[in-house]
Length: 104
Image 1 (cartoon, rainbow, N blue to C red):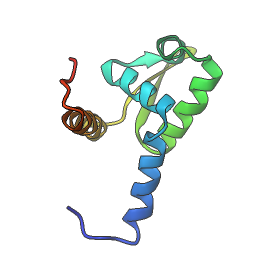
Image 2 (image 1 turned 45 degrees about the horizontal axis):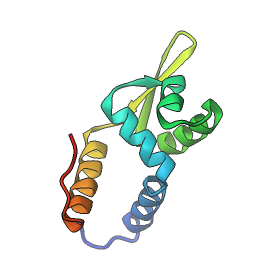
Image 3 (image 1 turned 45 degrees about the vertical axis):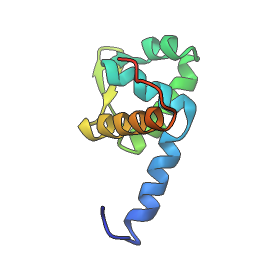
């Protein structure tokens, strides 16, 4: 565990604020499976393209997702393995506390 840091604590708090939104969590779980364009993400999370684009900007600003342009389309995926690790740990913790099994 890292020692308390005046610089890291506010950044970690902001990270968890961004991740703590249910809509953004759905988007993260969706792009954790595969790289997808905004239209496919919007369909998967049952939201409008503009609403998803807004949430993706917040996730990208926080460094959680990255984008790649292919013609007119932007494709999004998780930025790095740390994001996957954090999501896995969170879901494992929740399942443990609720005495449930994780679904693959």
